[in-house]
Image (cartoon, rainbow, N blue to C red; front, side, top):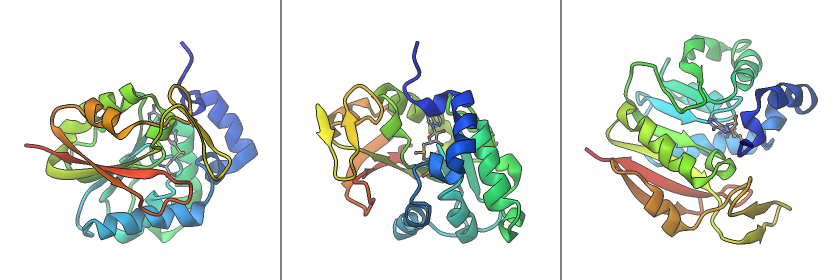
Length: 219
Ligand SMILES: C[S@@+](CC[C@H](N)C(=O)[O-])C[C@H]1O[C@@H](n2cnc3c(N)ncnc32)[C@H](O)[C@@H]1O
């Protein structure tokens, strides 16, 4: 079966790393969308002592800023691509003082949304992940990740909202059934598994019009 997106083919990602670089592969706008994610979480009440899981963290566009903001060893990331995690760590963390705050073991490559770190999280983040995946991945990932989020933890994720074929300002076209995907609010609500409360936040300043949703972990 064909993968829903090209990030799921590791040999394509390795090739793209040589042509686009790790900052390009995750969509560029490195200096805008990185700080935006940190600032949003801080606005939502993220405190330096909280533990954050960044799902589909890629090359650490947000990870750099969250590691800087949080107390040492509070940021964790998972992604399907081992080579993207490695490139992010090697270029953005290892040569900087942030290496003292982010253990390499806090980044885990997984095709199945596993977060086997042995800790519970206060905040989750998934930026530009579900925009590349069909809605059943949304349900499956929340089901899989629920046990590592404490009651009351909040997980923020971005999505495109729409149906049919939507032309967006930046020349981006989104679809119901292929990457980049969009969803209706009602479909997301219906696809949210038990154990999570769904809330539509909407606009949060993303330069390409991705909307924000909030999932709260229920007891
Ligand atoms: C557009 S990038 C965004 C990366 C990061 N969140 C950021 O803001 O820079 C999408 C990321 O999702 C990851 N990804 C795609 N499909 C995935 C899957 N099925 N499971 C986990 N990660 C996935 C990709 O490898 C890539 O790092």
